[in-house]
Amino acid sequence: MKEYSACTTILVGKKASIDGTTMIARNDDTFRPITPQKFIIEPARHGEKKHIKSWLNKFEMDLPEDAQRVPAVPNVDYKHRGYYDESGINQENVAMSCTESTYGNERTLAFDPLVKDGLDEDCMQTSVLPYIHSARDGVKYLGKLIAKYGSPAGNSVLFSDKDEIWYMEIVTGHHWVAERIPDDCYAATGNRVAIEQVDFDNPDYFMWSEGIQEFVEEHHLNPDHEGWNFRHIFGTYTEQDRHYNTNRQWYIQKLFNPEIEQDPQDGDIPFIRKAAKKITKEDIEFALGSHYQDTPYDPFGKGTDEEKHRYRPIGLNRTQNAHILQIRSDVPEDRAAIMWLCIGGPTFTPFIPFFANMNDTDPSFNNTSMDYNMNDAWWYYKSFAALVESHYPQFVQLDTTYLTELNRYFRGRVEEIIKDSEGKSGEELTEFLTKENQKTVAHTRKETEKLWGQMMIDSINMSKLTFNMDENL
Image (cartoon, rainbow, N blue to C red):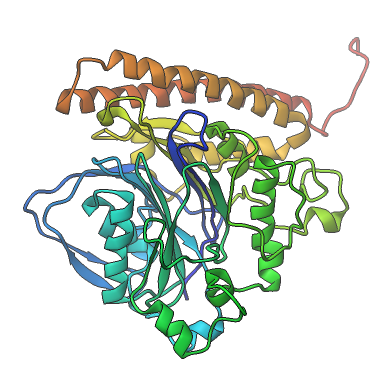
């Protein structure tokens, strides 16, 4: 039995962001709270054969002999969980994040059922990202693989480069649609078909599987009197959607468009909007770690018990990593790609900036154990988050101050590294950025240790196993 993940996606076009960058972001939520992950570099290959085989099903294929170097965030337990490289940016500054679990309805699946041994999310990034040259190329490349091998699950995939962002939804065994996010817009979704009206006369903004229009017409699948709404044709609107999915989209839009009133259970909440203000990476971080703050639905808030448990929060203890893949256009290409990686969960822990042009990651990130080990970044930050949550009223402001100060440091740190890298190129630059990434990791750990110590002392002082006596006794 496959254990489905349940993620949240945010995409921000270059004219919608405060600094002209493209940003694609996702929470990687798994079935279980404890699913250790690591952050590694998949090396480049030239003229070297490689074969990939899934542990989820019987899928396997030969990969091209030439591959770009790619950072990846896989699960540690390969034997039972497959590759699951999850997210990365290749050497040509093309970013990919996969996948957002997405569910097609029974009407469409009746005529194009899922393919049991097709290409699933565990092998998807490994089979695509090292071989593509633009976001648009990523959609086409993956589309050809789905046409050949089929899909065993509904999966949505994020692609970006410095100019374009594409969101691709694979909803049946062979059919999919991809939409380009307009430059001045953002999009948000979580575990349901998001794409709405498809314009088949506008290939600049839409791509689709071969024969999808004929498929829908032949089997009488379009419920609308007019238009071709992908969400209405292929999507669902179940009780789970209303309490698990649509509410996340509602809250993100509440953050980015506070002037718009919407119902958390509205099945027709727009996928794409223009934000009330330009979006920062800190805005995305807050959204990915959010839990309906300032609403009755906050599990830590003051609503009734029913209200506090009505909707699934965005940030969960099952969020194993969160990432923002940022491609800048105002600096040289060889230092323009940054992976903002939050390992262990985004509600209480930082998004650390890693220049993607690197040849290694810090040992605390790339050597994660399946067993509890505080030397591993995943276990360390997972434990840190649990400590903050254990005394939320007492520790949340300390944690907020800590994250704010780290974000101040990270902003300055990125610009410092770019300035200090001037004059470097090729392998010299890659080696320099690799070492600077590890210095950033060390500083983050040091600052986290300080707060950890303070919270432990405060926890000791808050013990209920205490008794006040006359100090003279």
